[in-house]
Image (cartoon, rainbow, N blue to C red; front, side, top):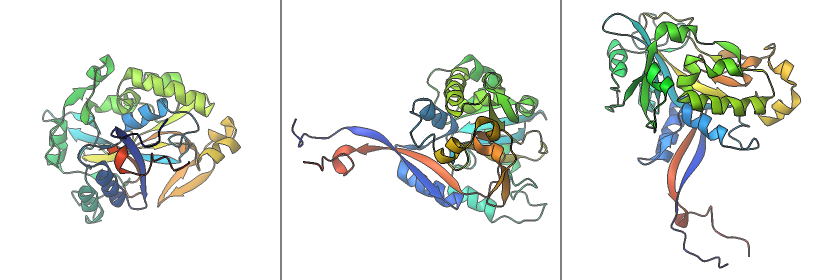
Length: 305
């Protein structure tokens, strides 16, 4: 076979973008993705894991920051709701993160940090996101939890799901069995549907070798009258594959060893699961995906004779 055949194929190629400053990581990820790519949301990260072998770095990396977020808002009728946005929501831009970071630390600040280091959002932002209107001018489709549970064919890359706040608050927070998580409302929304959640959880159960997995949120801790947003993170075993191999399943679930994730304390039980309870001041590791023409890069050239 000749090595000089034309290579005009366009491949979707992913890159891991890490930075100790979240806005800078997001900026670089968006630049890599460009207009025709995307920064991976939580459903996309879970989909990639479900289709990847266990020796792939999508499984063996400590954590990933998703391009997904969970917000608390109040409807015009006065009801509290949780709004989950996948693909970029209120905090879809580095500038919005910087606005948060530079806000007054006074407790009366309208767009600073909450006491739990979530991100306060403006009343207008909270109203708009319920209708799929985002600060960057994008309009996205909005679905109810019931619609997501019934199943939607070909979900777009960027969309919102609105669910009753009490349903979100009662969702599992902490360890739960894999079967229980398959029926958990927040897990279903985070994964992008019932089938997507089940597919990921079956693969994760095989990978982790445990009877339970973690799922954490702040809906049971926060003040629902304060509009606020939290970013979703996907955690693997603490420290990566070598840590997984050195810990038996029982010790992984004891949660008796602590680590520091910036100024926010994270216990060993963060080692495997989905989280939306970490401080919004954070390091970040995004996955950016973009089309690449193999003929213009060195990645697929035949260097060996």
